[in-house]
Length: 233
Image 1 (cartoon, rainbow, N blue to C red):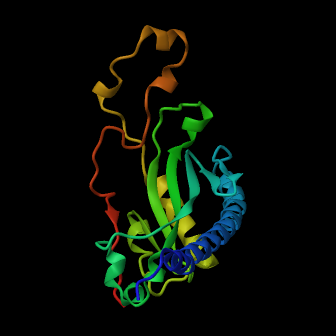
Image 2 (image 1 turned 120 degrees about the horizontal axis):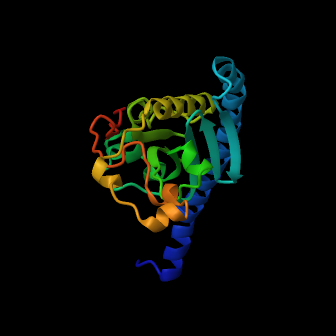
C-alpha cells in the first residue's frame, strides 16, 4: 500500500527530525563541556607560560553559546559549533565502516570547527587578515566522533566506530590544536602581493586593514594537507 503524504511526513519526523534533535543536543552539551576543558587548559598553562616569559599570553574568551576564543601566544584559536546537523556523501570514508553501514542514523553528525588566526589580526583590527580551518570535529547521537584536520589532528582521531568524545578526548584535541597553531609559522608574503599600496591607505593610517596577513598567504603547502582515513572495524 502506497504511503500517504501524511504518513511520509510523520515517518520523517520520527526517523530524521527527532534524530537531528538528538544530535544537536548532544553536540551543544559537548561544546559546553569543551568550554570547561579549554578553561582548565588556560588555568594550567597561563602561570607556566608566565614563568617562561611574562609577555606570553594564554587566555580564554566566551563569545557565545556556540563560539569561544583561546588565545595562546601569538595565535588565536576560534572554536565554533555549527548549529545544523550534517550527513555525509556516500564517497566519504565513514561509509567503509560496518558501524555506519549497520545503522545509517550513526552517520548524522554535529560539527565543531577550529580556526587558527593571528592574535595581532584582532588586536589591530586587521579585518582583511586570513584565518585557517585546522580541524573539524564530527559527533553523532551516540557520542562517537572523528576529526578531519591538519597533521596530527587528521590521523590521531579517526576511529569513528570506537572513539567516544569524552572529557579526556576533548583535552587531547585542544592540546593538538594548540601544538599545531604554535608550530604553524608565519611566512613572509610574496613580494608581488604587497608591492602596491594607495596614498589613501597610508594617509588614513589604514595600511594594516588593507593588506592581508596570513600564515601561508600566497603559498601552496602539501605537508599540511587534510587527512582522514577511517579505521575499519
